[in-house]
Image (cartoon, rainbow, N blue to C red; front, side, top):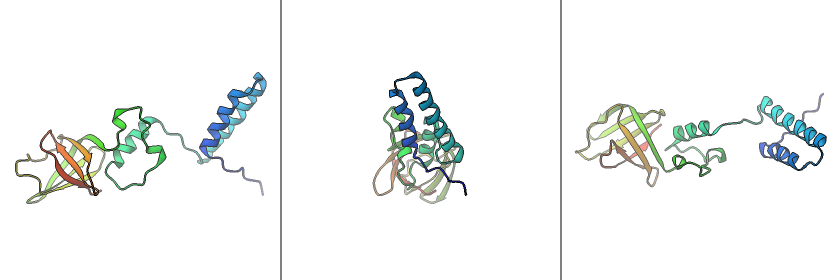
Length: 158
């Protein structure tokens, strides 16, 4: 039976590449980079390591906003963009339905379904294309402001 190579974490693979910077001789440094790059490419090809870009992380963060998904290091903000704030989301409503005398259910462009119960009577009907801003509140609820109207309390249902 052929021996399987030991799993290397993505951090150790990157540290291997970083370590090659300090190798003095050109041949030795090139050999170090070749070995480290081969290890990284092998881990990616084997599915042990996955590379994601900032845009993929941004889209995933937007899709998960308001859900009770566990915190993952890869989705945490690196502070390089104001849009990466995790307590605020601005998006668009793609569909909405009044589900009772005093409740609405609507879907955002990211596919999230939200619910508002007991909105004030003066709130305008929710329509596709409306702009919506969500801000984290407490106990799993959010302040939801649709088209700049007064904010109402709501929650994500799926």
